[in-house]
Amino acid sequence: MNSNRPLIIDTHTHLCDRVFANDRATVLIASRTIGIVGVITVSETLKDAKINIKLADIHPEILPAAGLYPGVVDLKQAEQLEEFIIKNLNRLVAIGEVGLDHWIIKDEAEREIQHSIFERFIELSLSTDLPLNVHSRSAGRHAIEMLLEKNVEKVQMHAFDGKASSAMKGVEAGYFFSIPPSIVRSRQKQNLVKQLPLESILLETDSPVLGPDPEKRNVPANILIGAEAIAEIKAVPVEQVLETALENTCRLYGETERFQKFKAEVLKLENS
Ligand SMILES: [Zn+2]
Image 1: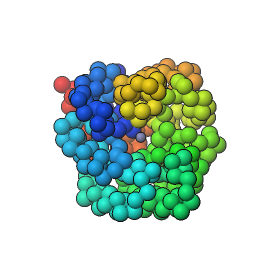
Image 2: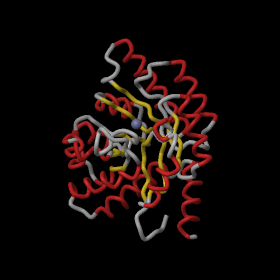
Image 3: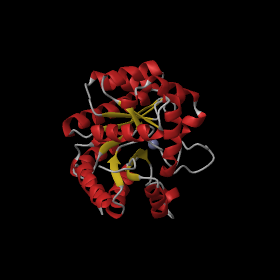
Image 4: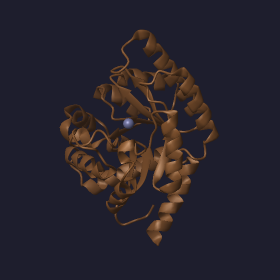
């Protein structure tokens, strides 16, 4: 990906969400004008995962992922998603979002099922070599401990809300942490970025949520707001944040088949 202006990949979005039903193409054109060439679109359900594959056929910048939101404690659907992932291996760039959510699930028995579902997706990541795009609300330390225990290497912790000290254990293991535009209103995210080396940071928007204004629909184009906040904290030019984040994204996702095809398409576009 050689270009004079930094190219950007939004590493965690929900573009399959129905709030984008009427203007998804317009949203993607707006993203493209600021340099966004790839948008990783995660799923929360099997239904989302199927939509994401279809969207990727229509929009070349959509990089589909398949996973089960940890708020959905449903072993049967987890099994169906596993089958779906295995069947669509060459189409997917990641398993996600998967993980732990102790904020939504408070019941101990349900949490146990949630943990066992996460464990299965971790095993699937190891056997398929697909990176994990991890959600870990109010459970950051637990999620990182589980990942470390299983010796997983390809990990993106999305919108990590835990302590920076827990995050640093992930950093040591080579995990990446994606930062959303809501950093402008989150002291916790600002502190996290202070601690994280730039080499461990990815950019995401989590569109349609986690925008700079919680009342407004978030879009991938807001990714620059997050990048600028990181640049200010790190006291480096925003271009350096964008370039390093892109390198980091390629380090994590670069080997998946779908990502390789996407890179070839982007190169064609850039050279045309
Ligand atoms: Zn998300």
